[in-house]
Image (tube, rainbow over all chains, first blue to last red; front, side, top):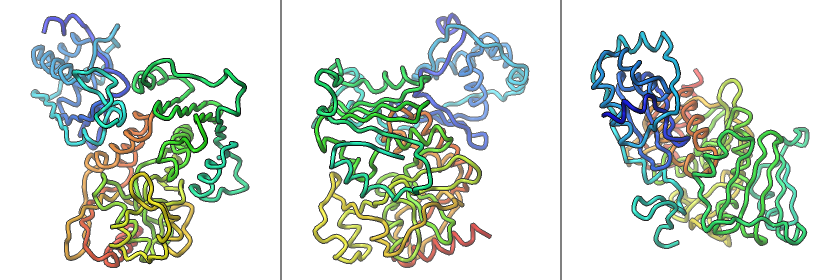
Length: 139
Length: 308
């Protein structure tokens, strides 16, 4: 947790991390590995605040739930979705107000069922052991 | 679009693979396809590393005016200047093209050019009646191509069964990008395709026939259709075909994956295009019956009801 607080602010971990909202349903896609993530309403709001690069301390102050926010950040980092940002972006009042009214209990559900469709590259696939790029067997 | 080349194989591929362009429309994309002999000795580029690190290159070009992809197995280069609408394609030898180019020539360039106009190619089939129709999305084996085949063989129109061009202005419209349809022998048999259509035709790299859509359908196809729904076919062997509303998220997760995988150097944009389509069109799951005629008839009724 300590290094999370030290980072100050975060950003999506590269252009392969894309998110889309559908009727309040947030979906994050990791285009490099094919995983996608479903967030509940509270998680979607936190994702918006975190991925826009607002200071973690401000987000925590907004929700009043420091540990919950830090835990959520840790989960996002564990999934490789965010990385520390060099500087933070000021938190707008509208988002601050939304964070103050946010329900507790943000969740992130990870899905792998599209991973065979959204692959890094059909020729030079990623392999956590061999590094990247790696030629799959048969090529 | 206009392409200049000395490679006869590319000329043939473009003539067979693209719908005839309108002579009045000025080209919004110009591609120059070169072979090593077209350039003075020593000017041909060389990729300096063992492999093309696709993701790193894409990330580096993200905010530039250029899009670029290199198929290192073939020594095949594609470079697009977004600002000028020009592309440069370099092939190491005549006919040394990625295998999918036969069915969708210059696919990457077309998608990159469409993105600049607020549209894009999407990996989906189409069926229409009276100028209005649906996008059909789903992963391989979902019944997408079989549905398009059933539809066009029983009187419906289509502007493509694999990739179609979406235009970015006003109500969603799909335009024909490529002229041919891919059919595997089993699908041709299921659809009772006349043997004369496939006799003597070679199978492509996926073991499929590549045949002009108009030849399969036996009637001319429109250049463009209005879209009224995004439909996800599902093989259920039901007695009758039926349609069931689904949410935009489910539609997006069916439409986006194959497109973002297959077209390089614009993956986040492709995901955004698919999300916009999923939000902009009502989504339906289509549980397929087993009779191609009944499937086509159900779709014609469904499309008619979307209009009212």
